[in-house]
Length: 149
Image (cartoon, rainbow, N blue to C red; front, side, top):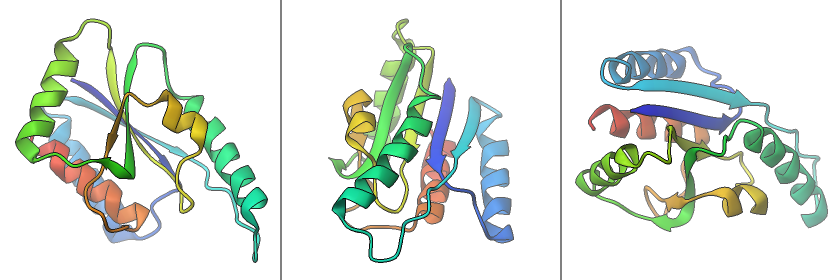
């Protein structure tokens, strides 16, 4: 399976980068995993709704520039569907067997979430919980889940 993770921002702590590296190594034994980081935009202090939308739009444009027409796009959203590991595995196998798709792309947005254009481009919305997790931790949680598939 060709997998990609497009995420906003870089991993800051060494121990998290090490965990990501280990999980990517495990994933690459059975799949091809690519991790693409796009810059996170700075959010002005006391930013209003319009300024926050501009930040999400810039991050969204950067995300969309890495999505190809033959990608199946899964965005991580708090309002997305929750899957068991088995059901997610089944979904990914089904997508992988569909010749229209060359790659399954997961997207993790920035601290403000994803903009409307990215959400519209998505084929599926995935949620790990009704709670909000730090983006760095979410990357590790997703890679850990994918490494078991």
